[in-house]
View 1 (cartoon, one colour):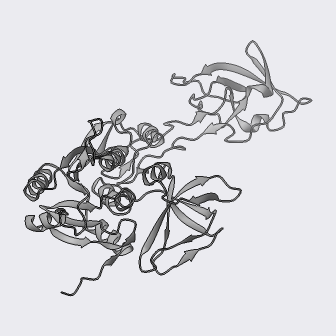
View 2 (cartoon, helix red, strand yellow):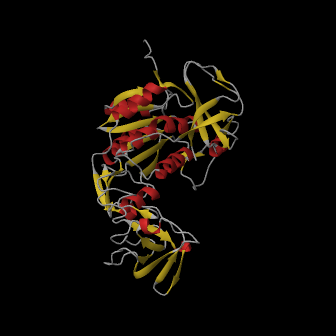
View 3 (cartoon, helix red, strand yellow):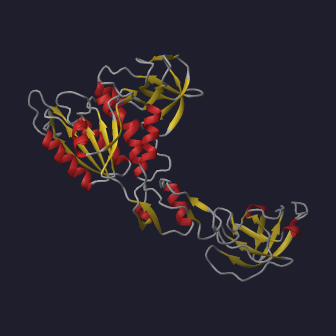
Amino acid sequence: MRKEPLMGYEQALKVTLETISPLNSHRVIDISECLGRIISEDLYSQVNSPSIDASMKDGYAVQSEEIQSATLQNSVRLKIIGMAAAGCTNNQAVTCGTTVRILTGAKIPDGANAVLAEEFATRREDILTVFNTAEPGRNILPKGADIGTGELIAAKGSRLSPGMMGTLAAAGYGRLPVYHRPRVAILATGDELVAPGQPLTDGKLYASNMEMLKAWCLRYGMHTYCSIVSDKKDIVIEKIAAAVATHDAVITSGGAWTGDRDFVAHTLNTLGWKKLFHRIRMGPGKAVGFGILNQKPVFLLPGGPPSNLMAFLQIALPGLLRLAGHSRPLLPRIMVKLQSGVSSRNTNWTEFVYGYLRTGNEHTIFRPLKLTSRLKTMAGAQGVMAIPEGVKSLPASAVVSAQLLI
């Protein structure tokens, strides 16, 4: 039987992102609950901020032309006719020979076109002696300078940071439309697996991959359900079918290869999934698979820890972020300089390399990691870089793009 050619990594990622759409449903919730959520529609400012021409300093509202020649030797005297404070109403207008004491944030009185900082004048009762100039617009924050009515504040698919939430609050929003967070089922397959914290007998392993995948999903605010599944075909069928029925996406961990007890792919075929790919030209993580079952995305991840995490980071996580509504469903990237050269084990695939990061003079330095201890090395990894397909090696000091894991 002729083997089906393996899909390349870039094509597999493209297929994943083009196949998955954001969840249709969204909700409107209080802004205080929105940190880290994904905006489900474009949001435009409902107000001007500031809503008035406001003073940027404590000082005096003046007509600029009246003090345009003021110096220590040629001071100008003005009569103080009132005071303006932030949030308070003041109907006094500045006219020739007058000024209004003004505090930061207060509305600029009618007739004034500048604010003189208080250090450039002396006051005695209601007389102000001015010894410096203030050009038109000096120390005035114009209406709408920070945010203008109708201005796009947050684009659909944006992740809400603290700064963005503050800006949206200033734009008049108290409640925000956000995507539902995906419900992700993580099924770890294998008779050798034991739940963390339980007694460990000979030949057994703790389900560390499951906890790692759960942590990554939680990092992005996704709801998770985890289960250890026995290597029995009927149980695998039952668990996958139930997970697909009750969740927005399913991840299987382990059983993704072609061994005698690797039932996951066979099970999905039995259940009638639409396979988009299974095994691609990337390493580690070659055995990764992706398809659709009952209109839900399903990701198959290999069981070996380095392959499991890399397959998740490069294929499953982007797919889940797309499902969650992210406009840029990829890990953040920076340019780095390689501390030492790296070589690919196979030029026919994309080779991914874990590494440490440290600050350099011009670029962040990327120190490639050798997987001498798989779990400890992965735990310390701060970034991932790729040797592209067709490239045998990259020399020390090469500047490349790296994904951030921290």
